[in-house]
Image (tube, rainbow, N blue to C red):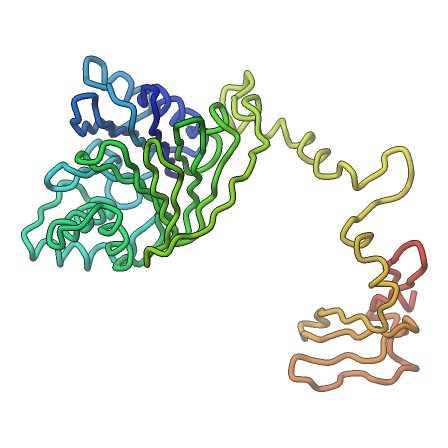
Length: 365
């Protein structure tokens, strides 16, 4: 599963991006890369096959300056695992760089159209097709990056979470999503971007989860702006993330899978917390308690079920007797109240409703 990290602010971006990629290593990946707009306004892309540690080795002695950048871990879908297919991807002019989670289903048709217009491709990925399409639209229409992304995504079929850098606008990240998660972290005069909250919580607990076909316009020194593909501004809720760093570390285990296995008892205990009284004999189900009065006042209960591979609806009245079965075509299978609910062979459930609880009890035993 691919991972996305981004940063824009006053700090050095590279250390934050690398640490963020390491937080996402639990997802599994085959290559990693980073794009940075340097202090001298160059858009530098570094990527390699292998682990994040291999990327760190690869960038030794390279320019990793800059306070804005995006980074990615890739799990190969289109094209083999290699440095050429790794993200980020440049546009043809190397003005833009893009990272992408998801699959562009119509990438082959889009690629054919771009090749017919003279574009060439270095990789086998659908992601490179998308960044070339964005640049093509930006160039022929002479529009800004946001508008170019909006128009390009209207041509795309499939799922995506993307982040784009523009060398000519070093104080801006454009990010968008559809059917692939993307979250923006809001700090003090800085923003973070990630495919989930794990790379962000070390720096801020304030986040915005983008919805499908929403685009985040992330600019240094400005408030977060969220728009849709039609450029209509979308209201967004800033949420507080309840995660701590201990939950994100391996905790002494050699890998995350082993940690998750040993955490299962605690997870089950947390799921039952507040529902099972270990000192008593009762189980508290809030979904029932919250609607207790409505349930007690109900005159009729309907249960969808299946009997001998035949779907039916079981109707139960306040007298707690089954008064009718109705199959999926609306035909009555059994409607005799003197018989319904007393068949020992089918052991159909009835409901004994009291003031204190609702207990499912079999009938006919």
